[in-house]
Image 1: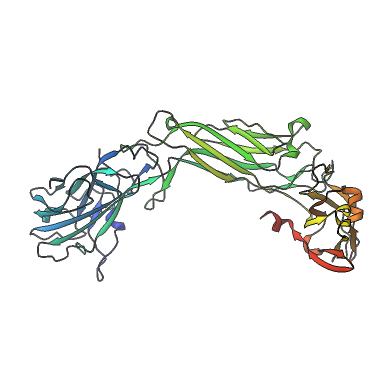
Image 2: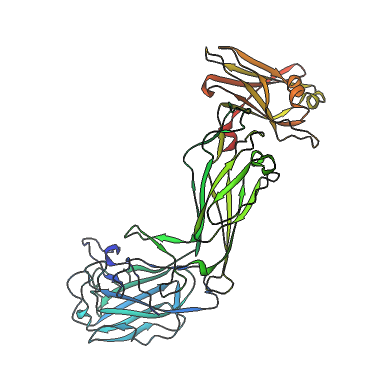
Length: 464
C-alpha cells in the first residue's frame, strides 16, 4: 500500500542562506487531497507489526539536478526498513540507482548512488505531480509520526539544491493521532440562579437554563495548508475512523444537582440521540450518547431547593469495537456552562458555630458594610462543609430584609447558630442583593479578649 498524501516543497525548510529554494518533496499520486501528512489512528495494532510501502516524490526546486552521478541520502524516523533495500526503491526514469551505504533490514538510513537524476521534473506547485522521480520504502511502522529527511550531493561531495548529507529537507509523511475525540460547546447565555425568584431565593433562573452541548466521534486534525480538518484514518488506504470502529459511548455529568431532583419535579434533560439518568443525591448523572452525535443539556429546577452555583463536568468514555483495527478505548473530560447566582456573595472559610467556639473560648463576629447611599435588599446565609455528621442543613436562610444606605449589618456566631444550627466547623456564605463593589465584608474572631480580623473571599475566588 502507498501513503498518498504528503507535504509539498512550498513548506520545505530553507537550509542554505542566500536562497529561498530547497529540494522539493511532494505527493505523487493524489492531486485531489490536501497536501498534508497522512493522518492515521495511533491506536492501531502497531505492536503486532504494521508494514507499509511509503512513497514520496522528489525533484529540484528550480532548474535541473546535475547531469552527473549524485548521491541521495535518506533518514527515516518513526519506522524501519522491513526488508533489505536493493536500490530499486529509488526510481529515476532512464537512470540507475544502487545502494551506496545502509539500507539494511531494521535500519533507518540509506544512501543511493544515482545516475540520470537530471530528468527529475521541477517541483513547482503544492498539488501537482511534476516530480517524475520517486522513492518507495517498505517500512515497519512504530506507531509514531513518520518523517523522511532527504539530502543530495554530487559524487564529489558538492551540495545539490541547497541540500547535502549534512543538510536535509524534512517531510512528515504520516501523522499519528487519537482515533476518537470529544468536545463541548458551553452555552453563551449566562445561566444564573435568581435571588429574587418568585418561589424564594435561587429557586429559578434569570436568563436561560441551557448549559450547552457535548459530543463524541471520530478525531480530526487540522491541515495547516488548507486550514481544514481531516478525519483520522483507520488504515492506510484512506478509510476514515467511523461508527464501525467504536463500541459503547458512555458519559458521566458531574455537578450540583439537588435543585433538579426528579422526585420534587425538577430534572436534567438531554436533547439528541442519547440517554440520561440523573441522581441528585450523588450529584452525578450518567447516560449514553450515539457515536458521531452530540447532546444538548438543559436543567429544570424543582422550584423548591435553592439552585447551587456549580461547574458541570462531562467525562466521556468511547470503547473500541471488539473486532476492528482500533485497539484502545478513549476517555476525556469537557466542561459545560457553569451555573452562577446573582447578587453579591462573600465567603468566610473555616468558621465555627457558637457551640464549637465555646470549647476554645472563641466567638466570631461578621460585618457587612453598605458603601452605597441606597439600601440593599435581603441578606441570606448558608453553611457549606459542616464538620457535624448529624447536622441538618436548613439551606439558604434569610438574615435581614436590607442593609441601610451607608449602614452596616453585624451578626455573630450565637445569632447564626440560632437560625442555621450547630454546624461545628464549616464555610459560611453570605448573599446580598446588591452590587459587590458597594459592599465590604469582614470576620472578626475574638479569643481570650484578643481580636483578629479575617478577610472574606468572593464567590469567584472560591470556585476558580
